Length: 342
Image (cartoon, rainbow, N blue to C red; front, side, top):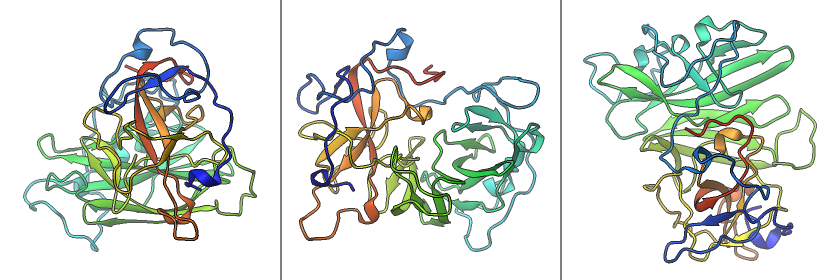
């Protein structure tokens, strides 16, 4: 649950980071780093705007490529959704004309770059048939919400990403962070849709490091999230604030600290919006060791707690705990395996 009064504080894990305050700068609260270890390279502790994780490809042949270097292939007509009307003028190509199976995807969960139409390997990877369209970055051009379907024997998962339309280059541009993931014995996605200015995900989520459940059961956290894009970063909208990508759910035993004058933002950048409505009460570090794409030098992903009234409705129903970002002046957290920070 997101109320701090319902959690059992655990012993802080380390003391290696110092968070930025809105009125003064000082030492971070105890226990907000994963392990007490120093960064081994200056590059690991350098700050910068949100970027693209350079991931190595696991396609057949072992070739590697950088997302920045990958060039989209020629586009062909894509799936059309008659239920939604295009936001832009019909003159010229739109994102509905793009063949997302023929462009390189940066797949952060499995840390690889691949083109679904030409992928070869033990796993079958295709673009899911459902694609949603709406303008989520406010530039007057429709954007797309699409998923990779990955099948490996009895394993199956869907990983959803946002693609923005670049009208000048006339090509789609992928938003780096995965927005939602459904997997066998994992989280469940019940519905994907679009609203004005946002993509909508209805899902059941499992708890991070929680008790094991049978594969047939949905996770205990029920939520419908609306996600938009601001300055290239996915953020929550529609009554919630916070990080708009995948947010691992806490199991209620993580150490929580009072927000006081610390700044919790919806994006890991200087221009990120501070969470104010509703105002957060507590925060606690998210363990990103199993989700390395959520590691950002000098930005720590945190769970956000609210002041839920006794006997009254929860601030956010369904037990969902949003994620936000806290800036670290001195970041001494260890870097999760092979995460590229440049």
